[in-house]
Amino acid sequence: MHEIEPFYNWRALYVSSEDPASPFFGKEYSEFYCSEYIYDHYIHPQWDNMGSPTLYIKILFTDYDQGYAIIELIGEWNDLLHNDIMHFKRNILETLMNNGVAKFLLIAENVLNFHYSDDCYYEEWLEEVMDNDGWIAAMNLRQHVFEDFQEGNIDSYLIAGGRLNEVKWRTKTPDQLFENVENQVIRRIGV
Image (cartoon, rainbow, N blue to C red; front, side):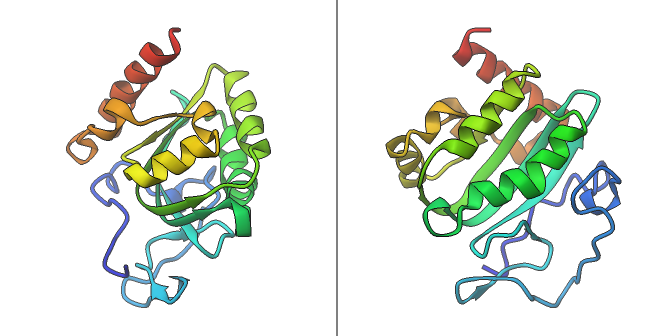
C-alpha cells in the first residue's frame, strides 16, 4: 500500500497544504519516510490523516468560486468501529463548507471495504450541502463497497455507481471532471 500515491498531476493547479482555507494548510510532507499506516500496512507519506486509523484522504483540488472539492480516499471506510464519517465531516468537510464548498466529488477506487453504522452524519452532510444547491458524488467505488453502501442505505445520501464508475478521471482537468460529474448528478436528481 505504501506505493499507492494520491493523484499528483494537478499539483501545478492546487496543493492543499498551500491553501489557507484548507484543513491541511501548512502541513509538511516527507517524500520518503512512511509514518502513517492502515492496520499493518504503511501508506505513502502524501496521504492525509483526517482522524481515522483506517481511512486517509487527499484533497486533490478545491475551487471556492465554483464551490467544489475533489477528494481522493484510501483504506477501509469503517463507520462501525471508528465512526469515520464523523471524522471526515467534522475535521475536513465542515472546514471546506465554511469556505463555500457545497459540491463534493469523492474518488473512492482505493476504498477497500466499507462498514456502516448509522446514517446521521450522512444525513446532516447532505442537508447542509443541499441548502447551498450542492451534492455529494462518489466515483469508482469497488462493486462490493458500493453494495455495502446500498445495504447501509448510504447511497440515498450521495450519487454513486453507474456511469460514475466509468469516468476516466485521470485524463481530465479538475474543471472537466467536475463538469462531467455535475452533468451526471443533474441527470440523476432531475434538477
